[in-house]
Image (cartoon, rainbow, N blue to C red):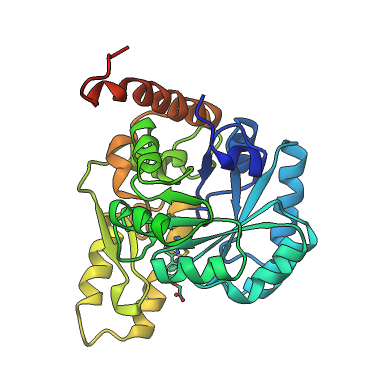
Length: 320
Ligand code: TUI
């Protein structure tokens, strides 16, 4: 049994968090992950406060276990969502795509454990000073909005820089990834791409099929010109977007309009022409659908097996 401080602190069985994927991570997926012993997370993405309250209340009807909400800091509704999360006393608040400093005190006062996603040591240290419970160090192997560091380089540097728990994300989809994260000093992992093909994930079937078919080199980063790089599958959309991004006569406003709603079209409509199929570089390893609970359990049992056998690499120690 893999057990770390996250389990006791968050009231979960396995140190596995589900990524707060915009347009995808709803109450059904979050409840299935939490019921499976991990930490399910509802994505607030660009939804307004009352829609998130409704999703939180729905999740409470589906699970008695703790779950979290991911607050996307670039959302136009971030202030009202931040308030709803505090009012609802959500056990865990994960933030992404920005600096959540101005909300931390209110969330701490409401008893929420705050876990910001960081893409640098500097932000991790600042978050620690502001009193967060833990940070998620997310490498650029991840899907969606990404920073510049890789998981392999970022996680140990964040671990060395702070005393709070560190969770690793980016490029992790099985027990090997969990063991690697633990070896780098993390106390758990957050996975998004692997949960895209969970039975309880309501993303469009076309999206699932694209993930199941993806190879290692099938993702690409777009959006650098607008200052928010985003990783997703190569697609009809990514090809057009990349061409326009490199065309100086195409304005930033036009680019913004081109990208707008592309994730919704992929996630809800399965639109193969104009949809943006965000996912991480580990998609090539994700080739089987299964229930969310089984994903959580199998990642941890694989990790356990690897950890028990790895001492055979230490010279002079008998192998089991
Ligand atoms: O947030 C994510 N992934 C996302 S958000 C999203 S919705 C969206 N769609 C289009 C454009 C932008 C967003 C899709 N995927 N992951 C967490 C994450 N946060 N990754 C990296 C960061 C991050 C990066 C820089 C966090 C903080 C940061 O610096 C903040 C600062 O001000 O120092």
